[in-house]
Length: 266
Image (cartoon, rainbow, N blue to C red; front, top):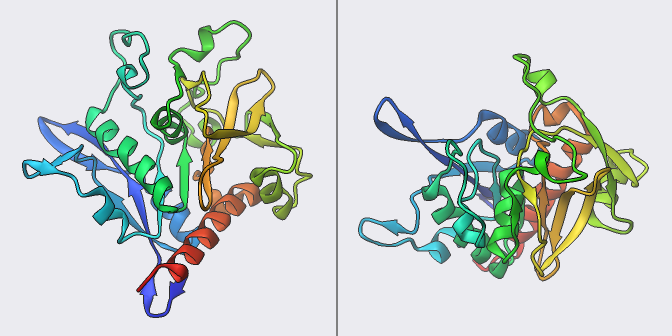
């Protein structure tokens, strides 16, 4: 486990709001917690989606982030509400989580401003794009020239999260370097695919790190970030320790958070 002196490295992991038989619960997938703990060597702390208000007052985002050394923005079955990017209203039946939107979007902007390392996964990369002014395809499979990137309908999670297609890595980019560290050639890697939405217009501060064969943006970095700020559209957290490339992503995140913790004023 990474430490700075006596203090552990703490990573905030975003959660979701769910209804459980009429009771509101906050949740985060076990695979996110295990991947960041096992592969990044840090202590994960769940951040509940309490929106932008707490006990009748504004959420102290700066105070929260000052206690953390990194932020992981997780995937989710829900989608960002389209009013956040001036998109058309969602179709009936689309799952949303406004409490999460009200938490993650300001958290992402503040974390990047503070120089906190950020790793954003699936819904997370979409939130990253929206947080900085980008837009989303709400039904990617209906966009001309795009493939169906949605989750395979199979009861076996190894099939649902299995490698589906290659992505082309940007030469000289962060992911290309991470892939080479994992023993890949640094040009293409195979990833899983479980998303129905994706980046449409890329936010100005973002740089493309990977694209799929049909031109979907699969990974980005934040050009203005002071440290690591990476978003990926796939799910590297699924059995991350068994996939060298996925593990390398979390190691890079862990190293960035450790360096941030070490340099943080005491």
